[in-house]
Amino acid sequence: MRVAPHTASTTAYLEEPAVTKARTVVGLDVHAAKIVAAVLDVESGELCSFRFGGESKDAAGFCAGLPGPVRVAYEAGPTGYGLARELLTRRVECVVAAPSKIPRAPGDRVKTDRRDAELLARLLLAGRLHPVRVPGKEEEALRDLVRAREGVRVDLMRSRHRLSKLLLRHGIRFEDGRAWTDAHRRWVAQITLEWPAAQSTLLDQIGAIDALVVRRDSLEREILTVLPSSPWRVQVGRLRCLRGVDTLTAVGLCAEIGDFERFGRPGYLMSYVGLVPSENTTGQQRRLGSITKTGSGHARRLLVEAAWHYRKTPRVGAALTERQTGQPAEAVAVAWSAQRRLHRTWTRLEARQKRRTIVAVAAARELAGFAWAITQIE
Figure 1 (cartoon, one colour):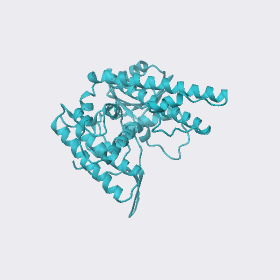
Figure 2 (cartoon, rainbow, N blue to C red):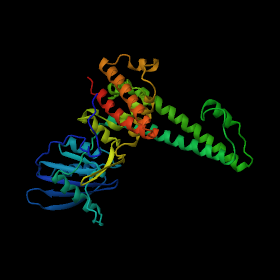
Figure 3 (cartoon, rainbow, N blue to C red):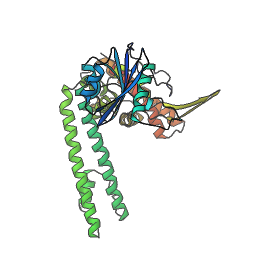
Figure 4 (tube, rainbow, N blue to C red):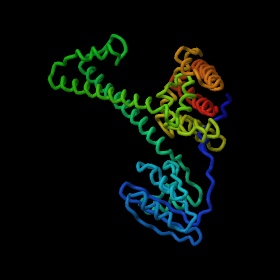
């Protein structure tokens, strides 16, 4: 697979939506308890402000009653996509804008809800808002489940680190293999610290770790249970053909990326997950820096972790053969091409004495391209 050159300038990863010639443009500043609307009449240029409670139906009904056609915009945030869906049911076009891509004047030091709503209305009229994808209700529920599992995983890692550092402060080290195996867990259960307060702290942290393990395992079982009837089942099957990408990794990528087909080229997906280098080009000088780290950190971590598997010589073991069984021959061919190419990337960059962490990121960028390619197979 040929991967087009990719730089940090590859930011237009989505096709521009068809713009409706609106009679009324509305910018909404949405909060949990209130919604401030700035209504701009395109013909007269009149701008008015209104305020509502936090109920989506009130704001959506108000927008639907304005002279049409009506276009509405609000920032993506913790209130979710309920307002966008409510507007859609009322046949009102809505743009949920990416907050990080909203242009703001550097010298503007006054920020109010009304000014934010007016800014959204003007930017929507000028076509300068970058929309985010609005997932369906079922897809959003599945994404919440996957993110809940990721949150528990992070909490478990932090709890284990706290316990390890507690033991280290008391001069206790485990030197009989890897940590957090069954043998290590039995070893931890036998430890008794000198001071009662320290022993109580140890027991509390052990209990926290055990509870998080139970929660993690329960969430993983639930993910595996709902996966066969989910809208991601085909994409997950394709992604599992790739080396280093098993079920939970594939589900995590689908949860964070959503519809792979909305990216016209693999480079757009690489940019979307923040794996392209940042750039500072002025005049004749072109400087490439560290990766942009935009988009989902969860998806980026999954790709980097999977990329480490490509250090080894390309091969198809028993586990990978089982995952590829029943999948299209084209998907298996893409997965094999990924193994060969990414292994060459590891070999080439390590020969240039690049740090392994840097090599893993470079391989993850290419792996994102193969993930895009393998999900395009019918």
